[in-house]
Length: 272
Image (cartoon, rainbow, N blue to C red):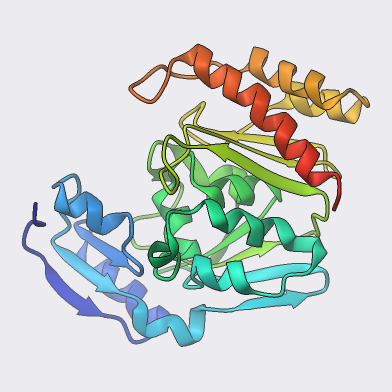
């Protein structure tokens, strides 16, 4: 299928992009890599009247910087840039997780900010942002504001962003040398049926594919904090969640995947 008609606009700077989207109204959308939005437009699931192209801002918003122990990632940084960056042991989980995102052509076009703004509950960047306690920096008509990742995701493809706001940066405030992400998809490159991310130092467990948003599991985190085994942590998570049943798998299947993937992620995180 082909998308519905739309008008194309090219942004020259961040302030101009925000002003343009505010002027065009709620029927306008930002586009960068377009890996999610274009597919939705082709199926007529999204019908924006205007597209504001952000690719001219890559020089300004595509970067990876270390600063006082934190890692700052520009919103237009591609998945492949993160995949190939020398992140070191402290943020190796970010680079390693990129191999789960689609295929190489997708990773060379898709962006960090776009993935977060799309808010798919199984998307790797959404899980990683919640796992590592990231702050998402957004720019809107009122200026800059910082949104904790746990407050950003509200539901299926729904975020706390105002219609005219755009993500400009993601800040990972602390190292995560013992973190890992594992997932299962029916085919390599597909979105995960279930994904599990763990940070053993921070005692955090985050699941994707079992709720409308990336889901922290306090029951599993308590097991880790109390010195329980990885299997006990996984069992606590499986008992605590209420996953959906759909064409990709039943609730029971998702619980079984949760058990397996949490143990796998914990085991992968340990050697670091």
